[in-house]
Length: 189
Image (cartoon, rainbow, N blue to C red; front, side, top):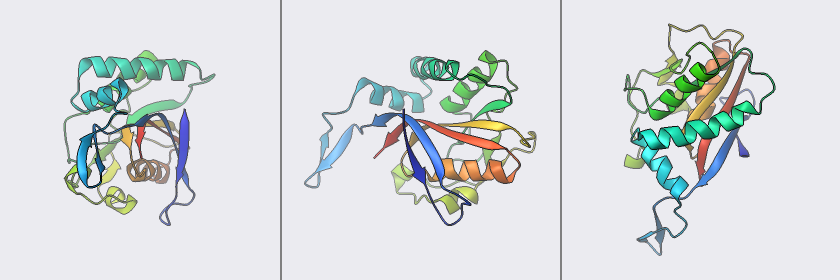
């Protein structure tokens, strides 16, 4: 597992973001020309499949996360959640499905949808500008959930800058969560 820190003036301290894999895009640019990336791997393909809610990809990464969380000594007072889609009130994502399955596996209350996007933001792949302020102004705690004094594993499929993970962490902490552990499946450089 790898990690990096996201820091921004809107944060009271840098947010540590851990990730399992380094993501290699299917294409990359060489001399201004788009070419197939020779480093694109089956795991990178599974990440893309995960974005399409592919059941095999969901199972693959769910199993990987079970292996990781089974190594924790104590999961008391810990809950699983996911970063919401860029679209307000969107259907649940594959990461929400995984967070829900983790909750079921560890006999936890389902907090997979504790964060909700209430305002659309442009997709990053469509040229949308992402910074922590964009996320903070478009995500809130779902009013059905009480986060006070709880510890959260905040999950995402791919992190690039870390702004959505940092925003989600900050929102949960302001809402009263005692700790937020950010874990992405992959990090795109």
